[in-house]
Amino acid sequence: MTQGLTIHKGLEGVTVTDTELALVDGERGHLVYRGYWAKDLALQYTYEHVAYLLWFGKLPTEAELADFHAKMAQYRILPDYLKTIIDAIPAGVDMMSVLRTAVSAVGNESYGWPPTVEQAMELTAKVPTIITYRYSRLNGRQPAEPRKDLSHTANYLYMLFGKEPHPAHVAALDAYLVLTAEHGMNASTFSARVTTSTRSDMASAVTTAIGTMKGPLHGGAPSEVDETLAAIGTKENAEPYLRSLLERGERLMGFGHRVYKTRDPRAEALSIVAKRVAGDDPWLDLAVHVENVAIRLLEEYKPGRRLYTNVEFYAAAVLRAVGLPKELYTPTFTLSRMAGWTAHVLEQAADNRLIRPQSVYTGPMPR
Ligand code: ACO
Image 1 (cartoon, rainbow, N blue to C red):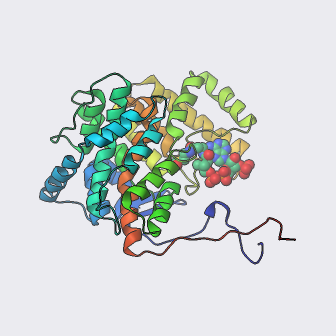
Image 2 (cartoon, rainbow, N blue to C red):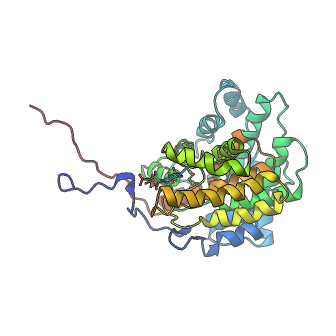
Image 3 (tube, rainbow, N blue to C red):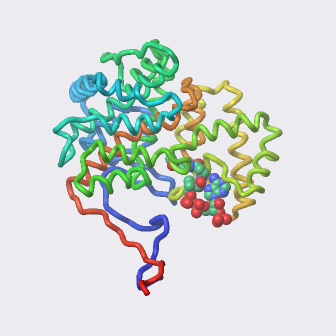
């Protein structure tokens, strides 16, 4: 308590809004999107179904899905000016920064207040094309034009690799995208809502969210999980390696969560998906072993903190199995969260109040 105000560092435990979009129950390990278990959606539906559910409040009928798909597919194409902007960014700039810059340039005079579902569709549809356009240019390949006949997820893989994707890869990536499409009041979603609360536009809100997603404490962890496993190399090395990290006070990537005090339900579902798509990969066998050792050691070094596997741990396994390059892990997480961010932008706008907390001044007073 300072100057009569209580500081909630990191806004921990502070409730800022109600939402119809997702229930994140950290004690029970529950994740629900608009009345459906996220895990069930991930194993039975596509990303397009779930984007529709988040934006319109219900799962689409077949006819509604066909219309929705056709609309989204039209928006996949990048206008020339956007390609010019992407091409002007120096080659060494990371993909998240490219995405942040390119998304900030999407839109036209209609992108004002209030934000619309149409804009949510356009932004969500364009993000995979921005990523794959840039990736192809960097790798000296002619960027593939988006294909309207493929689903959102299949088209992403097609544009990335320039060939028809394997259905098992599409299903695995769809499951990952569904499981990470929405997650309540996480840091990037909150930042999108703050921007929207000033009556700024949808593209600005998503740009803010991408900048927030980029940090390793939020969206940057799966590639670091991959690096940790590569450094561990063998099952025998898992315990000494993880111990040395913890002895040095370092964090184990893919473990711990601000809200989940049990195993993240998304990790639960993704471990099933990973086994389906990469069951015979020795990397996955090593990952399962590392998870068990890590949980035991975290309890030893950080007793009572309740640190368990988070979504990023098995996300690395799934993304690796579908052949995504490591530098696209966080951009792909971003691609999935587009549906959630934009749904929150719409929800914030529908019942808006400027988000404006306070701070306590601790500097000197004028003399
Ligand atoms: N490895 C080792 N120790 C950890 C870890 C970890 N992964 N996570 C938390 N701790 C420890 C902290 O050092 C702290 O110890 P202390 O009490 O001795 O100081 C205690 O657990 C509590 O940690 P906080 O930092 O208060 O937890 P917070 O809620 O702020 O952190 C976070 C959550 C950022 C995810 C954290 O667990 C972390 O850094 N994990 C590793 C990075 C990661 O996997 N990020 C992806 C998150 S999932 C997502 O964003 C989609």
